[in-house]
Length: 159
Image (tube, rainbow, N blue to C red; front, side):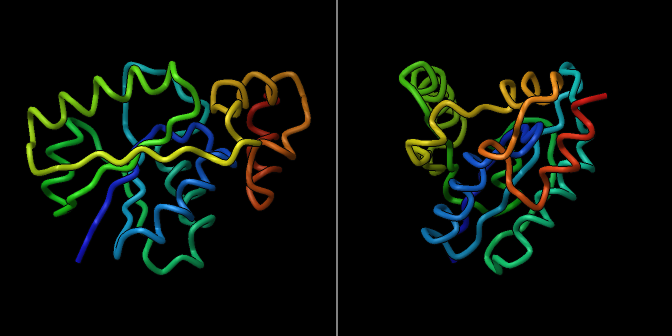
């Protein structure tokens, strides 16, 4: 069984994330969407809230599992018996960072492959950071986050 991990902060999940989840799920037998617990960052949503939102969003995708992790991604991938890491690349600046991470992951786990996916063009400028900023000022999130999560995300960010 070919398994992949799509790791990220997902704070909050965006339409770009959702696009990549749906597309990556078609490429593998099992996709683990993994929310990174990073205690050095202050998040708008707790890890548990992000996992719950992703579970709700992906409920109709039988090949997708949602969980959280901390520590090294390569160690988590080994525990999950994953062969592939899926990463989204929106712009060249993303690619430079992701390329460095992929090379280091390969050094740490030579059998683990990294696959880069580009989101649809209309999501290439969407980031969680921008969603948090727009939402905190009461801006319209309708083209930025999944509809079933929109009210929950907007309410939290307006606080």
